Image (cartoon, rainbow, N blue to C red; front, side):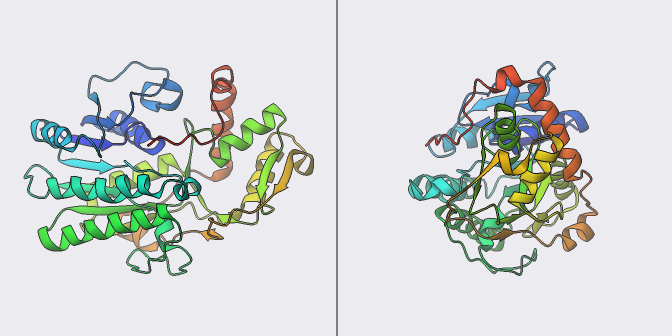
Length: 332
């Protein structure tokens, strides 16, 4: 029997890659839902250099304003698995309109889950969470309840996760949580650190290093995340959180320096130190040991090779890429 997976937020970077993953690696029918019309193929890997799959159907719906329509759609199509990427995701700008982040990341997901609590067709609900919920905690274990959010974005994600856990305890709601470090890859939004650095270097624009680039981050390729989500769907447990990290923690200045070396640019001449951002935690990494043991997952793509892939994508699509803005543009 053909299985169906619904991916809410299928226009997002990670959501669109999960669509592509299931179209390439399974015979499942895939349902995509996003509040915006489908983006150009530049940002949707499942449309990139190939025709649309007959196993994919897209619906433009908003989790905040069209919940009855979403539930009705699910009742008709009966997806066994729902993966929720729908979220306001930018940390820095969440201070400008915190109500937008709370509306989607807390009330939106809570309303959706509550409406789906007794649907017999639903076997898995995968909530895409974030390590930002831990804030300055240093435990970072999958079973940690050390939540210490420091931004409206992180607060909204904690609240949504806690409601989903309450649903699991009360109704046995089949939720599992995914928390990944900084995800990167081709088709990513151009304001993200890896594509933006490559674009700035190609255009001869100084790459800003906030606070000198001392903030530490770990990165993981989107392909490794998609394989991890697939493993959680097949072998994960409800009520559990799964961490994904590439295990490559480094300062942002070292990341930019690596990209400069690959592009034969002088690091000092190609960067400028700017004021630090007070809303950024100094380090984000995750302990993935239990995930690796529990679902037999390992990251496969080294950051060094992943950067090369992103650079090739940018070079191949340069004339189209330069038509788009390189900064975050907020949508309500």
